[in-house]
Image 1 (cartoon, rainbow, N blue to C red):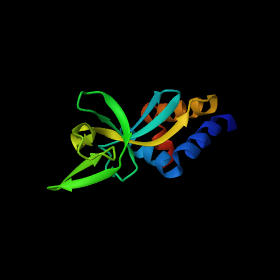
Image 2 (image 1 turned 120 degrees about the vertical axis):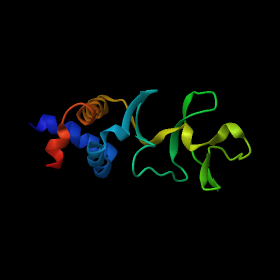
Image 3 (image 1 turned 90 degrees about the vertical axis):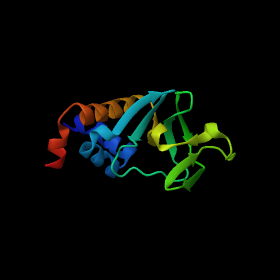
Length: 138
């Protein structure tokens, strides 16, 4: 039994208790991506409590339609619309991100070592496929 609990403890440690539990409440709002020997956990922009702060790293489609991630260095509000900038050069239109381009923000990155591979894939499987939510929330 303890062997089944260890990957979840590792996932709780990686994600944080609040995000771990909340991911079972809103499973469609979180995505696990494996890229460049890292696991990337993304909170989708459609999440009910989604907000962007300076220093957040966003996943978005650039002007040519390529999915990329960059850190936010400035937020400007123009006629109640937020515009997000990724570089210190604020007049470069390619670096301006609108809400329509957003996929979400990166909430955690971790390596793809064996322990993380097991815990992150088990978390992803349990959140998106299994009905573990009923066990945790009851």
